[in-house]
Length: 147
Image 1 (cartoon, rainbow, N blue to C red):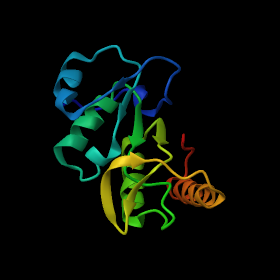
Image 2: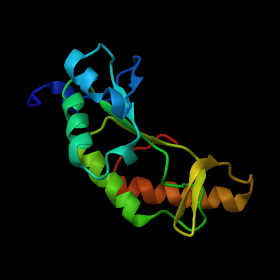
Image 3: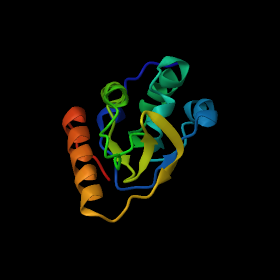
């Protein structure tokens, strides 16, 4: 794996087309260096570190990275999973990401994660829960978040 010396590692997401990067394509993207302006990945794939994170960092040398999370459950009235949020913050700092985005949905109940992004009821209570959770996430990540 080559060392990262590119200034691209600190650029924000440009106003140009990017691609969704899946784990199966890491090696090809590293080897061929396609002209995509940026890549989007699911952070949950990289939170445990290891080879997948090393490959993402190699991709990051050439272009900015956007994290698009799917498991934080912003719509949960129980609040955010602090451990998951800590892992997300550590990954965001490690990757020096250009952007982070999340769905407004709920995906966990009593610590059990569901394999879906479930819709929220259109109530004041649900809106208040989302606002609390987004504020907590933004505060912990210390960056803007697209919702």
